[in-house]
Image (cartoon, rainbow, N blue to C red; front, side, top):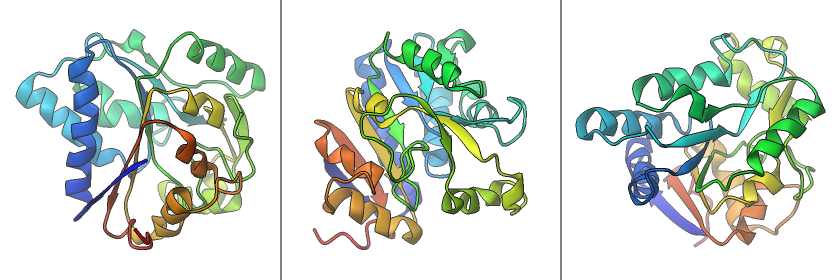
Amino acid sequence: MKVIVCENYEEESKKAFEVMKDVIQKNPHAILGLATGSSPEGLYKEMVKDYEENGTSYADITSYNLDEYVGIDRNHPESYYSFMHKHLFDHVNIKPENTHLPEGSTQADADAYEAELKKVTIDLQLLGIGRNGHIGFNEPGTSFDAPTHIVDLTQSTLEANSRFFDNDVNKVPHQAMSMGLGSIMRSKKILLVANGANKADAVKAMVEGPVTEKVPASILQKHPDVVVVLDKAAASKLSK
């Protein structure tokens, strides 16, 4: 696990972009696993800026998203489908048919998404980390072998995400479909971004703690190629 500590969020986003661009430049047909949330927004901004200024092409790139809320219309402003279009897809030349996001509300829908994931190998999987150590919506206690599955969101995740829903926890969908930890670990390379002091405990547990299902992100210690990009606040509790 390579850990890069940056001065601030802006520098962190630029560093994460360097990792992303290296993969795309080496393989114009790369398959990207993409994530949502506030952490990767700066990275997507850098990708769009690079596309506009340097013409980096996404015409042959394929993407698979990590997760999506259950029971939310795709066109709802807080769906992850809407997020991806707002922050990336509508601003680069990626083909709509090459973008894939989880959709549906049953385990059968999740199984169908997992079957699609098993047909490909993700070259770079982008991740954030939750305050409780979750990656994707794989909450504490999730099996390290889990495939794509339907998840009941924990109270801490509902509270953390309520800021996107008028600070009303009752408006947050209570379930999500998420790539499982087993699905994530099949990726060739993983890029995790985290910023802010509220992520410092989770980052420490992920990087320096024991590998335990109580901290889902700790499984990344077992992956052969992980780059973790942090700002100083998120890295503040690391001992090394």
